[in-house]
Image (cartoon, rainbow, N blue to C red; front, side, top):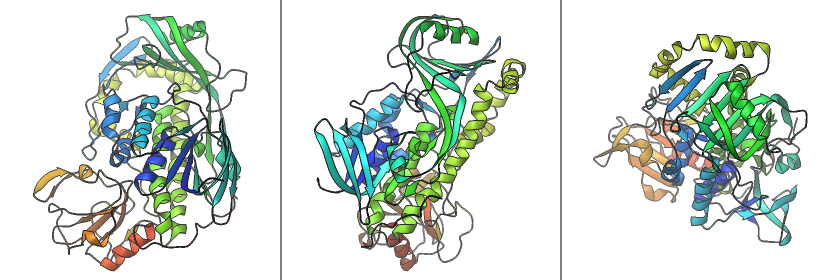
Length: 526
């Protein structure tokens, strides 16, 4: 029996790594275990959204991620015999520091996060399998197995970031509702004999489905992604199936009408797809995040991004729980906030995937006939920058808010104007100590940030611990106060400084006076 740990994370994908980093940087003792024996695996996710970069910024990894990313916004959209050449400028998103999509391999994201954890003294325990979980009254007892043998240990909470076939979810007895798609995805790293430009992304919308080709492969120059009807054999969800024959890859290119010939296939796999949602994201001391909590199609690039944003929401709450005056509200808020978001993303991705890849007669007609006819209108639509920006806000979760969360609290009188509690704090230019700077840059460190208006009563920094920082914004008029959560959402605000109300909110989320009550159990699965 080894020494107990506050938080054990199962799964070292982007979600688990972010969760471990977020919990560690907010004061928790963390272990992260992964059944895979090595870090490398071919990337499935290849894009980071603006909001994802925002929530990662306080963890100090954004610069390293952007150094690995390609931000070229040029792509060629193939619609029948028409090729629409589009180069998008930065999106019309003045309230974020990242008004663009960033093409970056999942493996590169994992490498950056692994390095950040190692710099903090937290090493991923590769080749370590979760065998058993018992949620006891005061702690969770778990059994791990590795080449070194079996180990029993305890933890305050166990976070399951272990994919769609989650061991943690099964141990918690949490329902897994939804079903499989009739289509599958083919991924491959290939060399091509082709005249298509290598510096842009090629997207082919055809009767048979969708095909992407772009020079972002890991084992060869080109990464190919295509949709097609599922095979007759049953593959495990979330795991790569058998390699795809070169002839099949060539057939996908030929069916799409792309003038390219496969000269070498370095790696390929089929992936079975499903749309599912866990019936809840928490059972007692067991929590779910990422693909363990929700499984979507690749449409909209939501998988890795939604998982990282789950982790940013949950990690600080697990770290703060021991000191919270209302642990039940703090820990229950994760499910209350993130599960509705996941439900909306499932609906959105099902609609997008139906249009992109469904083998039904109507979507085949739309892709094969109507889409080419509408090709001349595409550049005009993309030039409507505000329209494009609104679509990006939806896809990126910039519009997500938690107004009914138990952690969203208004102070003395409900303030008029400005973002409300539960909403994401937008970026803006502010003045602090006579210097102009961007607000999100000011807040780019872990913890709670308390923003005071220009004429607000002083709040002494010394009253709080190291994870609460006070800033006076001389560019923000009035006597008000706004408190920002570690994941960038407004948790508390008031029109004037009331120390008692602020202290009560901080204590409630665990940034105040320590409490000794055990982590409460959540209700049984219904």
